[in-house]
Length: 519
Image (tube, rainbow, N blue to C red; front, side, top):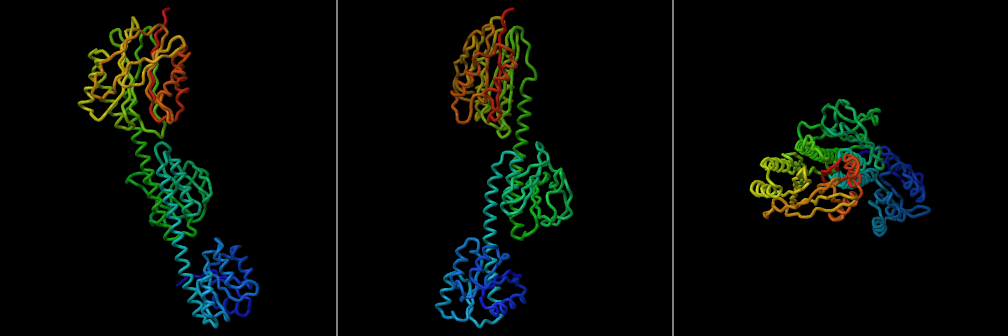
């Protein structure tokens, strides 16, 4: 049996209107009355109390019922409202055909039996409500797909929750709230006041609820902000998690107007958001692990070498980028300074792990006091044998402290730069990357003069999206021109500030060696 509906009855005869409205009211329906076609159209355009059905006489004094029905169906605001024609005079087949063709959903000829009228009203309402329900669900599923695509593209939890809250408000055409937590952000809650509202990201406090309408269980929800709850009254909520033991994700919308179909859509949205949050958490965990490993592999301190200054910098990639395999090494051995800078291909925990293996092998070969070219040759053989799928770049130098002579071997790494007299010059002489089966023992020999700087960087300081490698190298040379005469630490900070904008997609390692001038 259909639930009561708001019905607009249009007839210029007060007695006929009274009879029809009496039948409808006794059946439990709420009735709005109009005496002319113009009045009916005005009521519908103004909302007419949310009329779900129009019972429309064909013979009206101003506009005939056929045209009124036609106008109702042509207006997007009222096109979904069903129309039942009634008539005592237009009862022929041609009249019924015209009425149904021009927009009526049913046609009754007088005299009308009250049971027939009520049965027709019930049938038309069932069809209309089923169609509206299907259209409403289809619209919500379409917006659900759009929201799922948006949250899966989010790079950080606040962004994901904001997109999820805006999406939930759009899907359910109401206010919405979402909440979740991560080790980086803590518990966050986002509220949207309605489909057109802006998301408010706030810190959230835990709050107990007695019973979840969807699961029937009590638990803890994160929807209370520091300044109190968002709205009064009952809500429908989903508590979803993608992995056992994880902090769940919460979604809530007001319970008013919420149906069974909406509960299924809310569950789907909750599960999609829980999976997206879990993907971000897993990424963050891997990134933290890789950063910890990477930083543990960097030298804890730099050697103190009379007559030389050494400065290093390491800056991890921006938060939305993956960790790479950048590293540097500086050791003093028997009158020499040995320095290396390198980068393992890839951006992941595996890249950081390969970096650790390469660095340990490098230290072993340095302990045997090999020349830079021979050390790179041995490293290359090691990678071809034990890490055949990996490649890396490395620049390795051996500096004789007394004379300033430098023997340098470069395996596919960005060329070092010599800075002296206000000018910057590249140190050429690269061979293939490590991991490529070609000779790697070639060396370049030069002398680092008093006051001269030797600058070694990884490609994170050079490469930028939308620019070529050579353009980045030119930017680096320009930044070095005229620099390096003051405090070396300040020089390194200024160089990173000049070339690094904090949103780089790769790690940055910087190693600078300056030979002092004679007293």
